[in-house]
Image 1 (tube, rainbow, N blue to C red):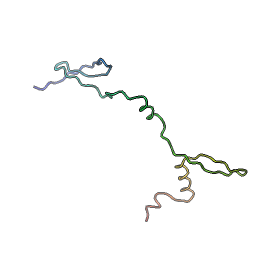
Image 2 (image 1 turned 45 degrees about the horizontal axis):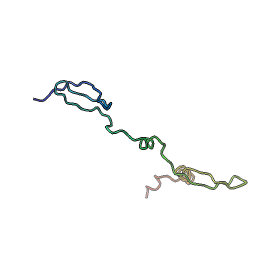
Image 3 (image 1 turned 180 degrees about the horizontal axis):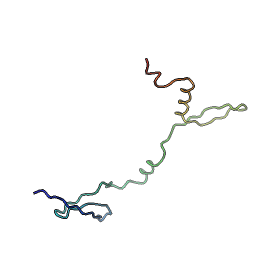
Image 4 (image 1 turned 135 degrees about the vertical axis):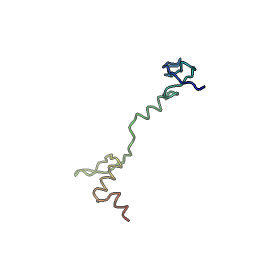
Length: 92
């Protein structure tokens, strides 16, 4: 006959939360990661996503200086200046 589980909350020896049936003693772990995440993996998740930067020459009236700009911002401004968009290329 199939057990109609009556679950009790427990904490296992290694500190994880689990449920145990008071009738049949079946034990299941709650929805948690079973393996600990190492510090080097979790650190990379918390870092911001890197955007590609390029060096651009900029003339300020007196001298030319090199400035760093984000590549995606530069492309967006070039398209805006030329009145181009992705939609213009789809109308072939």
